[in-house]
Amino acid sequence: MNNIKSKFSIKDLENLSGIKAHTIRIWEKRYNLFEPNRTDTNIRYYSLASLQKILNISYLNSNGYKISKIANLKSEEVPLLVKEIAEQSDENVHAINLFKLAMINFDQALFYQTYNDLMDEFSFKDIFYTIFVPLLDKIGLLWQTDTITPAHEHFIVELIKQKILINTDNALSGFKHSDSDKTYVLFLPDNEVHELGLLYTNYEIINQGAHAIYLGQSVPIESLQYLLSQFENITFVSCFTVKPDKEHILKYIAEFDKNILSKSNSNLVISGRMTAYLQDITNPKIAAFKTTKEVLESL
Image (cartoon, rainbow, N blue to C red; front, top):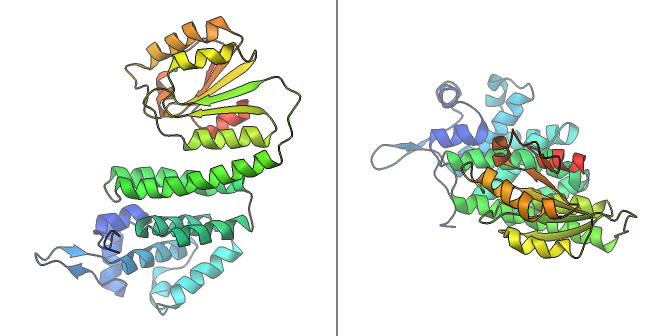
């Protein structure tokens, strides 16, 4: 348990809940909703129970409950009311909050329970786009603001990755090959390791009955050339999250064109943050998109 983050600053609560620190302090003073602790040097901090409470209060408040009414609820009534509302309405926010708690506590059981509850009602595709994608966006911000550590981020990402791989395996077990001769080769460029979006793309391609070859992280351009002799109609799919960086991305594209595209009937589809630096690309064999969803819609 010593590895679990159990002390939170008011800024941490703001980052995790979306409720401004100033508002939290007002609620604290006016309604006695929270009882901050103090360090030996008189620095205030909040407990894990306070974090869970602010997440629940934030959820109720966003669903129309006034803070004065929430303050009158008994402590055990708050999570029950949250669960009741989530069952009757859009439970995305509640599920995201549960996944956040699972991440903070390194709690695999809570992750699995929340995921399985969602799978009882929604498809994996719906869960990925409406829960996991917004969750990952929030986690990126939490990491940037030092609210969580890289260990927290890796923990939740690996659990999501497991679910993508399980669903990919299920898709392969019922695989029916389409009549198309197109082959999709999915890879990440040198020194790029952020593969969650690419893994999901691989799942969707296989689920549609297409032929996919998943190569994974940090693949050199020269190692892709061999595939040109094996398949005639290749769509290379990649995601540039941090690499190649903005100083080298145009050089990378030029090299890919020279060694791959100009020598074949293949094309390249890219997504990711770094595509913002590819606005001036005019090569008809290259298509750049911001999101995984846009990539899949184009294939």
